[in-house]
Image (cartoon, rainbow, N blue to C red; front, side, top):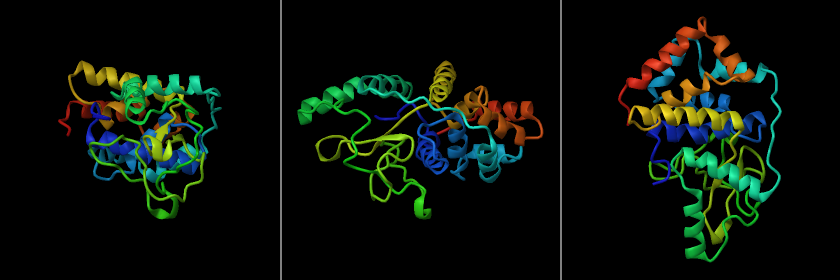
Length: 239
């Protein structure tokens, strides 16, 4: 199952994070976007924990916008894009090579053809028009926009799907710092024998050396207390 290593709240955080990245005009999913994505889901218990330390969606957005811009390095070749996506998605329990084989077997098509450059289908509305991203549910990919078409091709931290002949929707593009944070979160979750929760992700993100993350942490009166509060959530049962 896609995203089976993630809790429900963690899966929901990804499309929200992608929409936040789009609003900021960023072309890849970065650590700060994941914090914003978590804060978009008011039902996530971690939101209340962050709010106790002064970090709300509004204050975190302001901190990210005021932070120094980091350069974004995007791979240029199909091969490099595929390799980068394969490693990033492996962290989330998705074997991209197996997906590629299944597509070739069922559609007679090479999933890597024009990887990350096909613009024949756009996804859902993201955060435009106030609609917000839509989660495809526990069984679907955590980033799975798949619906109306008022996003313009190429906007946001994703590569568009293959239209009618293959998997539809969008694939996220992960910044190196985001992959590093996800790897750390995955290791922590595996060590405890649990699925990756938003607490695992945020705890790892808070340790990333990134100006925007540092700006969010600076919102809290005590950064160490913030980290400890998030770490305390790692032992809380999740679904």
